[in-house]
Length: 343
Ligand SMILES: [Zn+2]
Image (cartoon, rainbow, N blue to C red):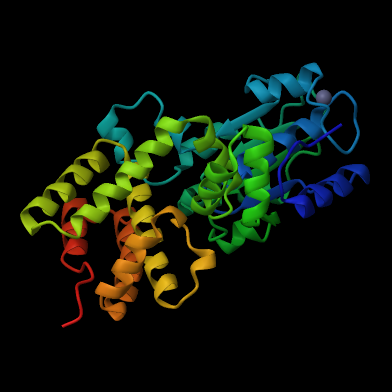
């Protein structure tokens, strides 16, 4: 009997106790950064609540556990931004910024029906931080008092939801795992060599799901390394060349690949944060441990106050994009503020 989750021991322990004493909350809010393991925890909870063994952990082997794992259990309904965008054209999908009331109504449509095969009906909502106000309000009543046989699990990249929603949920806030735990998992579970494991773990920032995903898809990881190369190149390019980068990202964004653009910005932010850490002599915590020389160069060659400002600006740009600012303008503006050499 195992939850088979790496890290987050306190969360598993808490849920075990809830299940063992029949005190499971009717609504949970699992929050934490992308790739930290929220979706897996939600899935395991759904399995544990429906497992044939009826203990404080899923067996992962019975028919209920297996069907939930495969995503085709009739009593587990999962909705997300992706399901909301399913069937839309790419440009329509790209305009989807929020979870809408129609999506929520559809998700909870038959919440009053009893379970078909399992013991409980589980409603999982991913991307809950994207709920608009109308959609949030549409689920308050169900959140407050779901049928006795139903549980709602909201999964969100931040706990920054309407207070009326948060207050009706049992919060489970997942935090990054210690770097060494990620290294260990990459070696033992993903068969990585020590050196690669150390590098991936550093880049993961403790997000175990991200690290395992990259270990399983080396091409994707390679692509992220190449993205970093391209970003570092921008530093040395003329504006007209670097504006081409802004144009390409903007096209990507409009074409529906918003998350890819956010990943670019996040990667860039991790670089400049490292530059600040190196400048402060704190190399033990840096992300890009394989590029210490280049970090030291930037730390030496750039005005640190500008680096500070640029790190904040990257965060602000992500926020602006989410608020529907013209992506090309936002990215060009960013490029105009790249840190430069001290005067
Ligand atoms: Zn089972």
